[in-house]
Amino acid sequence: MASLSVHCCILAFFVPPFIIPYTCLAKLPENHAALFILETLSLTLETITTSMAPKQTSGHMVRPSSKHPTVESAIGRLYLTSLPGFDNYTDGVNFASAGAGVLPETHPGTINLELQLSYFEEVEKKLKQQLGDAEAKKLLSKSVYLFSIGGNDYITITSSVNQSNVITSSYKKKYMTMVLGNFTTVIKKVYKMGGRKFGFQNLGPIGCMPATKASLGITSDCAHEPSVIAKMHNIALPKLLKKIQRQIPGFKYALYDYYTTLAERTLYSTKFGFKVGKSACCGSGTYNGEFTCGGKNGTVKYELCSKPSEYVWFDAAHPTESANRQLANLFWNGHPKITGPYNLKKLFDIL
Figure 1 (cartoon, rainbow, N blue to C red):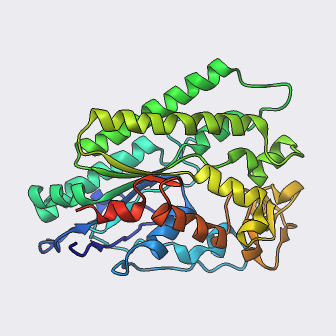
Figure 2: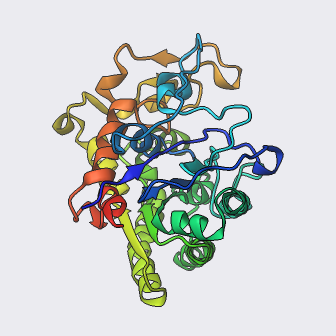
């Protein structure tokens, strides 16, 4: 098998391409593949791009300096910087936006999935300018497109749910259909632009997050309503992907069971080398589920554990670096029961 050159140059903060000057590039190496990520900010995917990708991976890493512990500073070394004047998109781009959703109305002001797609369309134009239409088309067809988005859409509608205010089944189905419909539209547009290899992460156990349990006053392991709607989405997603595969030729994908792998570590932490799974390392309140880590929201007092590596959750909604490394490895090279029908490594191996 020919060697695969994968260079993952991730832009942690996207700079609109139309303001950046471009220069001509030489013809790309044979089998060069880029990595494009459309998502809310996912530390599991950041770990993949910096730790699990082949040895040829290159990029400029930056460690944010901060006197206060935050999820960004605690695992900041997993991020890559966007450099002034950076003009090479042939290695890939991360369009991630913290808090983003599939639907535009989810957390207005973030870069939702449709807007991320529009930025990718700008990158496609620049690639054609740099490489020519034929070479750009070749690159886009060999590249892998990762999607990790949707959790914020469901968290938004379940955040105020309590025992006496349960979302009806019909509303859940209608809302899920809307999310998956928008999601499908973006997938097919990326396909039309040349994308053939896709990676997907299903919804995580949003009902088991410290933030969810704290906000809803839950004393059980996981909140019921958020868990139900996440499972509904995760049952529908593989059916949707198989349907898309029947509709468009050459569509190949990896679907990672993020829900199960993170839920197992949360509920049975000691089996996976952790000491604490249900509470966060940093924060305040029940389960350290309030977003006060690092003095956010003007809060001065918060708890911070001495050994984050012993925890599954760093703050109210983000796993620790140690947890993310385990999760990323399963996405990258997991068994078909966890990541299938391909895992990410096998996707990159397809020429």
